[in-house]
Image (tube, rainbow, N blue to C red):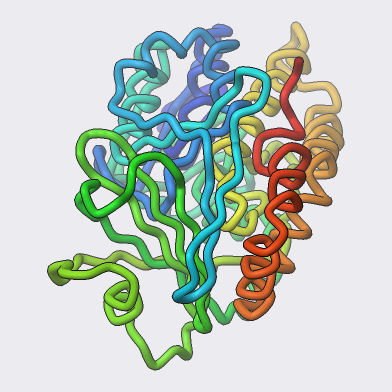
Length: 364
């Protein structure tokens, strides 16, 4: 006989863990599954925008989060190829951004979900989704009233539930490596455009720096060859990769299945808003779930309400994300924009004030 839960969450990244935490706190019996064992790494710049900080404060997690090694950032520097960079402020009205290791952040948030009452099973392979009522896994069979897909850019839950769009083609691969933080100057996140793509590098606390690179998959140069152009005397680095970088938008919810985080929608990595939007969609989905639950155990208009709120959430950042994607899809546009910003730095300061990540969603 299958074990029974109110909610089953597939994927214990930031989106899945926060959703599990909030619904478990509200009294739901929640099972959180992940195919990997924790702690584990993720290819991500680890940036937490001011809105991410706000969500952690609203959910009572801020004090606990501050115990993690992190690095506060107040400026971002852009450069093109071998040109010197130009900086812009990221702080706004007392708000700031920070960076943190995804390995530490994900393990911390997952453990907070367990502390809130969610059951957690790592190393689980999901094999089938029977009639949208039962998950057949390597660790047993589980039934639930509601299923949450929080399993990332290649979401199995999206495909199994019929919510996935056609993957299409993607000509870029994301790469990540860890550098010793002493190779960086104090302070900014640095974003560099070059002919094959772009990379971002930032301190993440604990003596290390995180480097993420978006590279045309047909490039003749490897990530190591490219990074050797711009940093001297580096040893050979270990590299991880992920694909696809971009993908059509999946349907956010239908028939007792809700998608959150990257499982529903991917943002251009250039924006650095992945974690923030994962937390936003998790918080939104949890609130809709809690408020839609009826005394008889059914959910009133749950999927419809979530789809509407999910659409509005991304609509609020359409201009900035569209501009970022336009720049990032062609390295030559990014190179040109960085050179223009160097000559006319007031344009970058204006963009930082009105469009840079996290600014548009801050609730004053």
